[in-house]
Each structure stands twice: as structure tokens, then as C-alpha cells.
Length: 201
Length: 113
Ligand SMILES: Nc1nc2c(ncn2[C@@H]2O[C@H](COP(=O)(O)OP(=O)(O)O)[C@@H](O)[C@H]2O)c(=O)[nH]1
Ligand SMILES: [Mg+2]
Image (cartoon, rainbow over all chains, first blue to last red; front, side):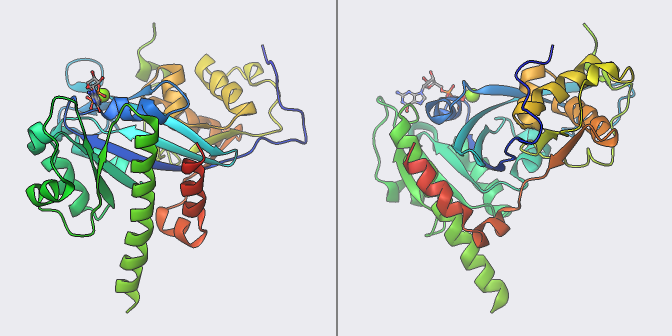
């Protein structure tokens, strides 16, 4: 039953893991974005929540109608043997805030995908990351049928802080998604450095 | 088909389970030989040890692979930690990563994809 076990004395590499969240309205391209860069087909993981949206932490009466199962898509990028980046698509509905908290805790940053035909769909995500001081970038997913607006117009419409990057992207294209992710990491670095300065001075 | 929470015998609170992150990494202890010999373990416990032996696995990956809710995976992993069959590496908080300049490595890694 045990196949291909590592030989004694050669322990497996224990990687450092990081996560970036991918948020935005239903159908905006979250799963597409994750799939464009993930080395695995996007996987699903599930959380069982109570009606109130809290993770189930007591099993009495767990079975059946008082709980909801929420699925999250995620992908993996092995940057190095010892460095692995995970991308998590956030569940679309606002009532799963508790799950967002769990996902967001310890996240390096986030991408909020926006569709210019229905920008209001990403308001909730923008509010959320602003309130929690989680560094995020806006990825404007350029659907072929949508009119293309300059980033500054999107920034104004979303009332973003001037330092929040707005990146035009195509969630289907790997190169484009790589650029978005690099923007998230760069912004996270700048954000953390600035935040630290504010704290120490 | 077993109801997922029946597998954990109704337990959900576990010291180690507390906020076990989706990207926390589960590593099988090298001294563990044949977890299936341990009759207190369920088949799912044994699967987790097997899966984490060659390649450490994140909690999210274990959930996806075993088709179990994350809450159940947390409980099962907690049992295995108690039995000293696996250990768990919690993710480094992002604020500490800046110091270690890991983020620079992430950027160059992404560009090189
Ligand atoms: N034309 C175009 N279609 C896209 C783009 N991104 C996603 N789609 C399509 O939009 C639909 C919804 O995408 P999906 O990733 O499932 O959205 P999600 O609900 O945010 O996960 C799918 O049919 C995608 O193929 C894009 O950049 N351009
Ligand atoms: Mg999706």
C-alpha cells in the first residue's frame, strides 16, 4: 500500500506557503484567473457553515438543513521547491463574511477583479479589503464585449486611494495574470513598508 | 458513505485545529512506518499520513483530495498531531516575509513562470 516512500534520512522539503485572494462578483473571471496560472486544475475545498455564516464548530445537529456548504476554488504555483503560492477564489456572496475573514487572515494580498459593465459587483470586496487593511489591486478584466475604460476612470468610479494599483488584464491569459500577481506582491511590499514606517515614526 | 462529521465522532474543537490555516502544511513524521497498523485510526487518518509522507500537503489540498470539508480535515489532522504522526507548519505572517525578502523571490519566481 505504501508506494514510493521517501527513504529514511531524506526528509521531504517543507515549503513556505503564501496565499493571494481573488475576489469579485459572480462571473467576473475568478476561476478563470486561477486556472490560467495554476499548475493544477483549480481544486475545490469546502467549508460547512451554520446559517449565520459561521464555520461549524459544534457538531450537534450539524447534519442537514441548518448548514450550508461553501465551495472555494484554489490553485497552486510552486515558485521553488520550498516556496509555494496558493490562489483562493473568494465565495461570491456577502453573507459568507466569516469565511472571508478566515481566508484573508495571513493573506499576502488580494486581486479584486472588476468588470466595467457592472463595477458595483466589486464594491463589497473593495470595502472589505480597505477595512481590514489588506493590500489589494484592482484587475479590470477586459471582456471583449465591454467598452474599455482607462484605469483612472475605474479608479474614480471605485473611489480608490491613489496608491491602489489598477491593472487592465485578461483573466484567460497566463502572462496577463502573472503581471497582475506581480502587481499584488509589489503593492504588498510597499504597503507593509509604509505601514511599518507609520507605526515606528 | 459516512457523514463527514461522523468520521470525527462528533468532535470539532481541538487545540491544534484552532485557526489551522488553509495553507498550513501537514508533514508526516519520518518515524511513522505503517499508520494502518494503528487501529485507533480511521482510513481517512491513514490516507492523510500517506499523502503527507512524500510531499507535505496544505490543509486545502487535503480537503480537496479527500473530498472532505476543511473543518473535518482540521479535526483529523489534530488527532494525528496528538498521536505525533504528523506535524503542522503554520504559514509565516506576511509582515515577517518582508524582512526575509521572500517577497522578492516570489516576484522573480512569478516572472520566471
Ligand atoms: N472574453 C472574456 N471572457 C472571460 C474572461 N474571463 C473570464 N471569462 C469568461 O467568463 C465566464 C465566467 O468566468 P469564471 O472564471 O467562471 O467567473 P467566476 O464566477 O468569477 O469564477 C467564463 O465563461 C469565462 O470563460 C476574459 O478576460 N475575457
Ligand atoms: Mg468561480
